[in-house]
Length: 126
Image (cartoon, rainbow, N blue to C red):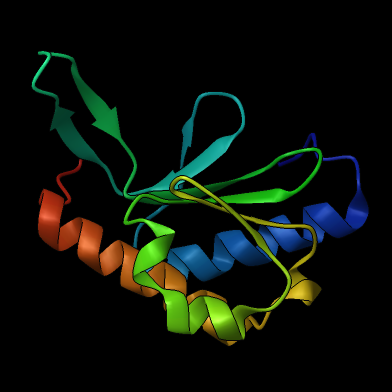
């Protein structure tokens, strides 16, 4: 996050980091150069491919703040309706600024995603 040039995006990133740390009760871990993750699990596909990935996380991308919510955003239609200005991708929630969304609703989305991922995938630290 020290490399985020935009002061507002840097402040928003710190706020999301604090929110995710509080919700997950996990310490952040870097996944590559730009993704901050919380918790981890091991996955294995039918093809034999396997690996480790975070339970939830975010990245301060140039165009938006990207939150990685592996549970799938289709599980939260009521929350998304109350969230505020955002875009969706497969397993990702994109917001321009933290001020564009209701932060309490965002906290609920993160908590629901993390809980489901931890229960479903064991939430093993790897």
